[in-house]
Length: 466
Image (cartoon, rainbow, N blue to C red):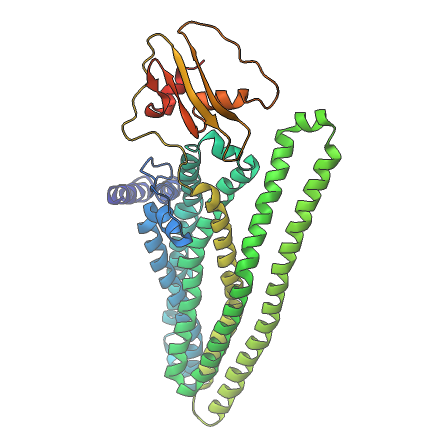
């Protein structure tokens, strides 16, 4: 990563200084941030897979650790500059009111200072934060998790896939990675920005007058209580909504994928009714979550109104008594207005975080499950000499009391041609699936040229079966 950094910086410098090719320099800058991490790295996947949401998140974000740390510090700098700017406006107003001669005597210096801060420093910090978030993490982390999810899911047996809707599995493999990315960005960038703004405001208010911090402390306490209440209600509803959404995706995709069966059976209306019922359930879950969000926003409007009144009203009283200056009152008001704006977004963010956690938890039911049928650690490659097949006491009921096969034994000589005949449900398909080792037989054995298929690699077994 360090070599890539220095090489890209040198290339950008050459373009600007020697070739004056600004467009190419911008291209290299984007190329650098886009390639800080390879999303399609073929590194090992955790085995056994993570069981908790946070373990799953840490496992999938591990290749991006350095980039995520860089994003956190970029956010820290951006938020700090925002606080300094709002405080600086208040200080500037104080100078205009109390010492205008200083401003007039150094007018161009003041203008240049504002220009450097507003046109160069602040945009540069925001640009770096945006490049890391959008170019290095947004797309790359999503694709990296999808790549790892597919690599794990594709290892599962056919039997594992037959236990669930293909559409639901696909939905989880596609949408869960997006939630991982959003959760990482919300935790390290968005949440950090809001916390730094509140902390910076508290420090500034305490330096003005300690009494100015009282409304903010009360607001933070009530805000945390409102957030906890929202989260306690939203989390279970988000889990249910995510499950309902996956079900809708599953039934729609499976209906369209198996359209020949639907049309042949004349079951269009049944499919329509089934999808409608799934959508009704999804709508119900979404409205339940929306109701909590609406109640939260109403409470937040009241809370923010009280904070503004306390800070502006209390600040005016302190100004009248000489406790703070007019510029400090302006700076405090600007900071509180900024907090009011960000608080609406921040409390929604808290709900969104748990909504994403719900999506990840639901997706882990497919993409973070142990591989159910593995090759043995000492599995051998199938070596076909004559092609003799021996089936002994083969039994498989798919985990049920009956159905499938029960104590089937026969042998086929190498080169011999046979036909498997029987009524529907007699076990013909089951026999073929066990022969291909799509399932692990519940009893008995299958051997090819004296080699038990359980001791062979699955890929070598299937390559030799035409």
